[in-house]
Length: 422
Image (cartoon, rainbow, N blue to C red; front, side, top):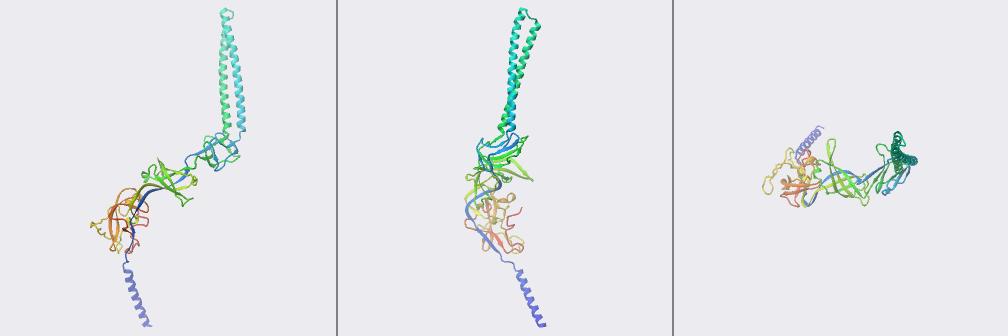
């Protein structure tokens, strides 16, 4: 029994020593590389907005009453001046009749006043001759003159009454005409807020009964662009966008307006950019959420670097220091310039594609070791970064990832998979 315990102890000791040296051994370093390609780079600004008709008219009512008839419904096509609803006209007809009677009465009073004026003028002229002949007294003449002036005043008052009742009659007729609600434009009814029998009240704010889109073949998107990107947006820039209803299809548009008024929400400043959209096939509908990309810069036939290559930082086997960069093929010391590891200089929030030239560096794999190469970059997007200057050519492979040689991290990218932290 004692013999077996000795043998077991020896086996455990040997296994422990072997395990110690196995885990103490530094992991083998390997690198993953990607080729430099030549092609087109499109730098974009991403934003989100909602589709709407270019011209949307809210139709209300200027008179109060009960809806008696509805002539249109959702998606109904209407013409300018077409009746779309009618309010019960009974009270308006009665008001017209009453105003008509008052107007006729006022005209009759005016005619009566004019007749009295004519008689007063005749009496005055006759008294003037009789006074000259000494047949009547001055008092009788003055009484006739007073009657004449009074008759003239009565005519003026009657004329004012006629004008007043005429205005009331016109108002009553207008209200009667307003009881029939008509479309102010050609378009499509996209919203209806009333039903037959519902009472509407026109007070200080006119209630909205219908919403009519004038032309759904021409639509627009109002997108909110961050203040960091608004300087890159220009009029007539091309845009592309997708909507959830047609995820497989990309639609096109164009920037037609950049509004200067800021919108501040929780200390975040944005600006509204209006994108014009052709909707001839009527696939797009008002209110759809659009994920918009504005093409702010485009370059053809340029060398494209993978963004991961600019974020890569080699690690030593001990994992506690960067590997000393070697000299490039020209013999120049490859020192790491400021801003290295940040695509296109990093920018605010690490947003690539600002269109500014930045000095950075990438690493080539030569004789199993990473060799630093300084480069100068230009515009960028999420997939590629333009290389303006550098000792690299199409087909060269740059390191984008390191495995092994770091006890704390499996990857030597020098940051999170999503890019550098700020």
